[in-house]
Amino acid sequence: MFSQQTLKETYVRETFLGSRYSVSVVSGDKIPSNEYAMGFAGLKFKETSRLGPRPKIPIEIYEFEGCPYCRKVREIVSVLDLDVLFYPCPKKGPTFRPKVLEMGGKQQFPYMVDPNTGVAMYESDDIVKYLVNKYGDGTVPLMLSLGMLTILTARLAMMARKRKGYFYSPSKIPPSPLELWAYEASPFCKLVREVLVELELPHILHSAARGSPKRQVLFEKAGHFQL
Ligand SMILES: N[C@@H](CCC(=O)N[C@@H](CS)C(=O)NCC(=O)O)C(=O)O
Image (tube, rainbow, N blue to C red):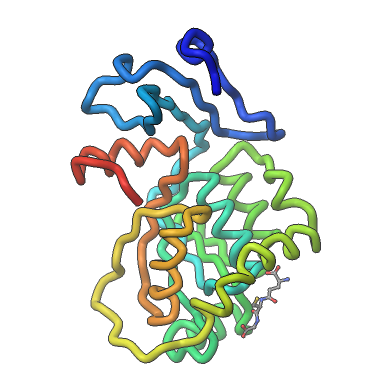
């Protein structure tokens, strides 16, 4: 553990290359009660993230849980703190799979449409590059730039979930998308996403990974913060 003295002033910056996230540790009484900050043993973590330009309208992504290529894209969405309208396309899904075929000419996932620019594309690497160039600082995080090794790690991360969020389950689609505050690395959020995908329920994801300014927004809306 850190000593109290060190914690008061220490500024810890993640050492990963190209990281946009930083955290400083301060004593709990330094953070006003109306300000969100994760706490532990009387200490608070002040987290921030460098963000690029924000899209005016949510980007649209057609994908499904259980697809490692889709996971790469979901990870960069969290890293860039983007809000995205997800159209789930589980295997045998009758609604959005045919739409992707109609729009892009084939059923391959992920498929991204950016209504802000009119750009639409397949291929996870191309989507990741497009998003970091348009809404980030142009840097693809190391773990997303390792080709087959990236796919392998994405597959490993999903293996224990045994095809959850993979196959369609009959459902009634609501007239407007649901809204979900979440981020890719959270195991709790993952369980909810799996069900949304199986039921083909379109949802706007409000990304709120560690360091996201949207954590404060949710804290104010809900009176406490939990994803
Ligand atoms: N090179 C592509 C590969 C994408 C891919 O193979 N996606 C699979 C799902 S993991 C797919 O679309 N399969 C056809 C299907 O699900 O019908 C990428 O990186 O995006």
